Structure formats: structure tokens, C-alpha cells
Length: 604
Image (tube, rainbow, N blue to C red):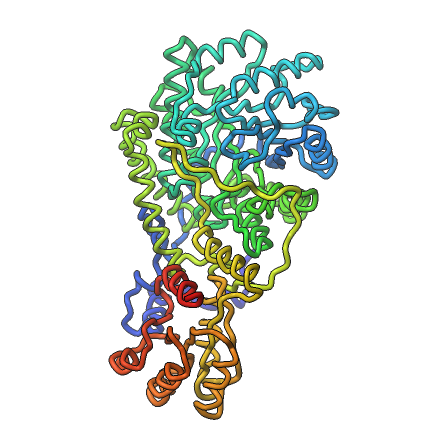
């Protein structure tokens, strides 16, 4: 549409004008510290970008819809089949077969290759996409699947199948490289008429171990190149070798970085193809929502995270997307959770029509800048890994593990201080949430094998605190508690009292709140009735200046053993410490450490 006459009557706004207005609000504060963030890999994410020229962007082989894939991971093959048929009847057009023992099985999965026939009963393979997720059991599972397809009379060359063999991912997740001969495996598959994608470059082990976007891409490139080299060295042409490869990226709730990451992978692999003397061809790119980002607490928020992740993966150009059901971290998802997973995709495809534009990020300054930055940083990391001898050698030497450990330490600090908040877990927790249904509870976590990369969810430190609180509740009938000593008028204490309540309850510590007190005697009476040795002063700085010290002294005299101040003490610090206020609760403090100490103090 043409610009309206009214809009054309005003001069175009400039970045300089915007910056002048922002500087007026910041009042001398550092622009970068307040409004610019950096990814774990150090990539700068600014609040505003100018329009950009659309760079050439490789896309899907066939423009249009991405495939809606559903996990098949029930341990009972007949039950798995019933769930899969329901998914397909409900609109899914692809399945991901998860085999027990695979890292992504999370303690569940089909019980081996022998279960495929029952799990795929009445599933018409020529009509759907299929991806195997079998881990170390990949070759035998692939053989069983193709044998089943041939027995049914299906033309293997016409099936949309990804066999999912990834020796690098197996080594990363288990600490042991499998003794596969990729070239021999591919020769055998070709001999049986399978001409599709046998191998997968899987980013999940690196993502779950803490990788940022650039390192995830770099590890993926190095793993794919290792497979390409092995196939060529074993006698296959580069054209056949690259046609045998597919890729799997993790889709997160961060829209900008996920869209940029998906776009960046296609550009990066095209560069690898050119370096190999190949004319770039479209790749098969799978996306799966992030296990790292799922939570056990307030799991309904996982639906929002998944929606953003699917949106981003689809707009970025993924060919197929698998959504982890919102209860995946709690246990084996039921039919309702599976329905929500597939309907998340249907709404975005069929109601929002997101598939109708091939590359909606083209020319958008923010997306183009982030895609370029990810390509640059990922390529540098990819070269560093290659200088170490490739991804397998980097894993063996511990160089990759060291990189990931450094990133985890940085992210752990951001999670503990809530600079990276988790809605429903570290922010806005609900101590009274109702349980959700799963078919089977998740098994206990297994120790990480020697030499393997850890698989960690971001919410685990807070969930451990909540689990400890649940144990106290089960044992005593009451959670650990903290008394909120609200001082002054409601307008003075409400903001910090709300902040304190959310913070303490993130660790399972119930906040006993109130509407304030006419005097300290009433406050002391309420504190004693709360039945806890923990108390937190909550009010404004102005009220603290007059009441914080005497209130703390009164609470100490009444039996409070651990006192907190909501906010920073400022000039009052010496007096407050003398009065017994030992801990400060403020935005940016190490909340995980504070909550662990509070739980210990509450049970002392």
C-alpha cells in the first residue's frame, strides 16, 4: 500500500533522534550496559538496527510448509502405535522414532529395533516423513526399518526417511565413539536401494551441555564435515556423501537468535560445500524444541516457549520441526500433551500461515545483522575445532568440554542472579500449582559417563530447591517459611514485598505476608504466629532510614535467627549488620545461594 498523505507529511525519524531520546531517559547511564546484551558466545545484540540489504539466503528444497513431526517414544510398542496413529490422524505428517537408550529417550523409548513393526502398524510410510533417533543402536535400527519397509513393498528410494546415524553425537553423549564404518554402512544401504539421508549432524548434545548459538553451529559443521570426509575416504563421491547428510538444530524461545541460527546454518554449510568444490544444494534441516529450556515447575509455560521456538524455526527455514510436549521434563507425555505439541504447529501453519513467505527475515536489520554475526563467530569457532583435529579429537582432548564448561559457568551465574529469568520457576513461581498428568514419571537422572558431555536443563538449580521444600512439606506438613516484615504504608512496602515473596518462593520458601502493622509490637506478634526463624524487612528506602534498625532489633529479640533486607542497605549497612540483618535480597544477587542458605536456616 502507498504511504498515506498524513504519514508523508511528517519527516522520517532518524536513529540519531531515537538515540537522543534514549539518552534523555538513561540520564548518563551506560547505553551498552542498559540496552545491549551479549549472547553466551559474545555476539552483540542491540536494541535497534537500520534496514539491511537482503543477503542471498539458501532455503528449503521445496518452498512451502515444514513437516509437523511427533515423537514416538512409549516403551510399549502397541501403545506407541496408538499414540502415533492419533498424531497422524490429528494432522502430524512426520514421526520421530525414539529408541530406548538413545540420549534423547530420557529413560523411555521403543525397546529396540524389534519393536518397529508393532510401533508402525497401519502407518503408511510413503505418506509421511520419518526420522530415527536411536543413538548407539542406530545401524541395527536403520537396517530393521528398511527391512520392514521392503517387506511392505515400499520403494526405499521414494521414502522420506532420515536414518539419523551420528557417530559424533554418540561420542559426545556417551563418552565413547562407536565403531561404525560410515562408508561401509552407506554402501550397504545403497545396495538395498536406499538413496536418502543416512547420517545426521545433531546439535543437541552440545546445546544441552551449554553451547551458545555460535558454538552449536560450529560443532554441527565440524561433525557434518567429519562424516563427509569419512564417506569420501571410503570411496563415495562427494555428491553422494552430502546427499546422505541431514542436520538437526535446537530451537529456543529466543525468536531473534533462533531465526538467525537456522538461517546461518544454511549459509555456513553452503560455504563448506563451495570449499569442497560442490555447487551448494538445499540441505535437510530438522529442528527440535530445546530440552534445555523445559521446566518441571509451572510446565504450562513450556507451551509458550515451544510456540516461540516453532515460530522461529519455521520462519528461519527448518524443513521439519519436532516439539517436546510440555510435560516432557516430568515424565512420559500423555495424549493431551502430545495434542498440544502438534496443535502448536498447526496454529502457526494453518491459522497464522507462517509458511507462505519463504524468508520473512530477509532485509530486516536485526535478523540480517545477527545472521551475519553468527556466521562470522561460528566459522571462527569451526576453524578452531578443525585445528584441534576435528570434533572427535576436540571431544577426546577435552577442549570442547572446556569451552562448554566456561559457557555453563557464565550462564549459571546469569540464572542464579536472574539476569536470565525463567518464567514460572525463578520468576513468578506458584507454590500451589496443581500436578499435571503423565503416563509414567521420569526416571531418576543417571550419572554422566566419563568423557561424556552433561545434559542439563536451565531450571535444575531452582527445581532442586523446590524438591527440597516438597520433601519438608511431606515430612512435616509445612514448607520452610519466611516472615515478611512489611514496614510503613502499603504504597511504601508493596513493591519490595512482592519482589521478596516471588524470590523466596522460587526456592520453595513460603512467604508469610501481611498488610503492614501499626507498631513493632503488632509486627512481633505476627512474626511469632508465623512460626519461622526467618524474617525479611520490606519497605522503601525512606521508611528503612527510620524503621529498619529498630524493627530488626525487635525481630531479633523475638527469636528471629536470620534476617533479610529487601533491597540494598546503602548507608544503613553498619547499623543493620549490628542489628542482625545479615543478608540483602536485591535484583542481581545470587538468589540460588541465598535460597539454599535460607532453607538451611529454616530447618536449623
